Amino acid sequence: MNKVLITTVPFGDKDRLPLELLESANIDYVINPLDKKLTEDELAEMITDFDVIIAGTEPITAKVMDRATNLKMISRVGIGLDSVDLLAAKERDIIVSYTPDAPSPAVAELTIGLILSLLRSIHVSNSELHEGKWKRFFGRRISEVTIGIIGVGRIGSRVIRRTKPFGTPRLLVNDINLSKRSDLIDFKLDWVSKEKIYKEADIISIHTPLTSQTKNMITKDNLLSMKKDAVIINTARGGIINEQDLFEVMQDGHLSGAAIDVFDFEPYKGRLREIQRCILTAHMGSMSVDCRTRMEIEATEEVVRFITKQPLQSLVPEGEYAVQSGEL
Image (cartoon, rainbow, N blue to C red):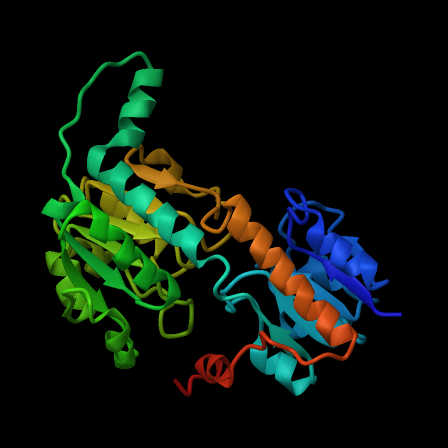
């Protein structure tokens, strides 16, 4: 009998349907007993007897796979693949699936919420009022600023579309895939270099995957090239913005704000916590009830299809393997 390890937590908390899908197919499962994001060593210790893993963002490395001698499938709850060594999986004939569409609306909406908070200093006002201080902050409206979007895939394009009800901000966009221009022809966009976005945008929002090409894509020099009163948002992946550089730049008074939902190491315990005008959230971009539930259901449905030998629907495309190999 196939055994499934569910490492991502929470799982099935808001809707038991994913668990019921496994139970109705008579599939044995175990939910991560540590109830936290696993380290590589913890996962390697835990995974030895399992055939399938329903995974979050824990590191599924060659070392982990070598301990998982029965492992045949990795079903990612989410869109990012930087935590899975796709090439090692391919070498071991382990198939990998994911749920790229399910989390996108929630991440895009969180991004808009962070933009609004940063532009109107909602987070700073809340903090000061809790400390007994009464101060009214001037802010800016979305329609009056220049927004730079780096990465216009599933999430970045949704962020662009969600700016429309607020008016007509100037939109600077950048993506390595120029074919995506046709998906947004109903918007007036300026396709520019990342450097132009850094220099001219009031809001810079990151929506790229974490790859060898985007690791530390934004460092101190890039941050200092931004306007002094610009804000930067990362709801994509930790490691794209160098966190230490961001701390140092903001500590010196550059940038009016930042919002970071994803970190190099999670749970985050770094020095950005010292910067009041930096919003920090606990990798909660996808954590709306509907989107999180849809992610869990889709990942589980693919596992059931695999175990019951039905055609699979959400396999990771070959292009993602090429990205990890450095071919793209």
